[in-house]
Length: 212
Image (cartoon, rainbow, N blue to C red):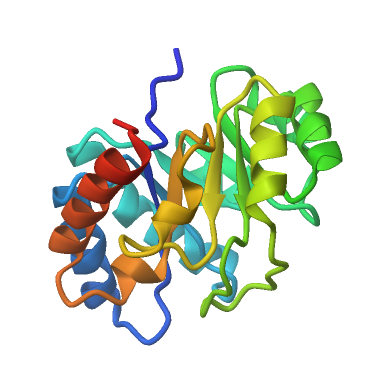
């Protein structure tokens, strides 16, 4: 049975951090009650990715929060993560579903209504939609309008999260759009106190968006 909450979806970024610093930030965010953790590593070897994923998984299990692996189904399977998130250039959702079976969480990136419908039809559990604002992370971003985000939310029955440059001070742009939550990277990873940052984000999500 899949049991997860998309309110505050935390995506990691280990750039410029030692492993110890990185794991401390992840645990601090978990203490601040992020609702889901996605481990995103674009540069690590498969072996190093698995090793890090196992350490992060120990933390997420301690706080009873699902761990999602970005892109890499092999890594997710190797260390038995709760799910994967797939971008438009990654393995198709339908293929991933065949490999992982019905019980793993599969998320998909969608920037158009057509992509959202395709991901839903292929078996995705949720969508990440954006970028709403420009981001500083090392990923290619194409801006997505709030109108498109709203259209996607109304076009498919699975939950959708907004992503891209979001923080506690700018999420008011999402008011009135039936998202399940927001995805953040820098708002937590670059905070001096990730626990406090997560707590403030949770309050903003509840107060500004009426979620949670």
